Length: 286
Picture 1 (cartoon, rainbow, N blue to C red):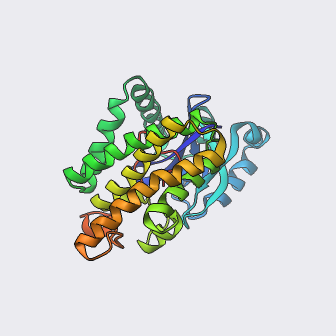
Picture 2 (picture 1 turned 30 degrees about the vertical axis):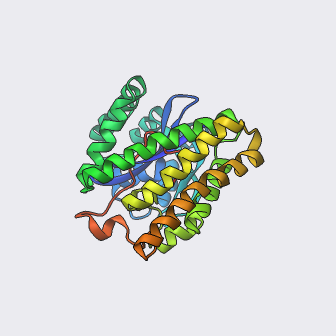
Picture 3 (picture 1 turned 90 degrees about the vertical axis):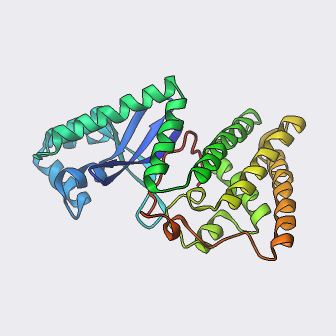
């Protein structure tokens, strides 16, 4: 499954979702769906009871659900049950809940919105701008963030062209770039800002975003020139690109007399805490 994980909101409750590029379908976290519909404090236990009282559902559970890695509340990825829209509809049949119909309509809207965005990518950008404005980000920051998404997409296209595998290799290359220009791995950077499952880029300052974008844009241009193949060669290009941003950072800090790597995170300066925003191309960038 070539997937893009995103967090959606139904009546202010979080539902983890995954978009599968191959099947062109949304997969929804089963435990999140059950938590929304039942207000259960232990959705996994509710699943057991659900299957016990619906033998047909239990018999087809392996067909309806599949396991994929999802970010848990503690920020770690664990394999959890997900189901397509059709599968969730079948599960909902066995759950007596007044929220069932509104939830079905919400899922249909999620699916329709994705299809519209695939036909017109500008809709994804417009939605991202709307979401960031709703969270209280400044116009300047939003412009920088949207540009960073475009730059990231160009870089991942280069990685794909160079034979880099989506998933762990993308994450490793991202880590190389981050460590080279900032002096911190992605995990260390998030810990420095006091983040857990939140997006690192959604919590960067304007200067941090600018430097990160410079590193990725530089890596993209070097890749186009050197045409690296495989992970090892792309890793070397990633370092070269990030060094450009590292030099720029050093020059700026020499003028300022301080580090531009800030512990500040979005919740420190936004009126409301940020939620995870689905990027136009969020592949392994968090």
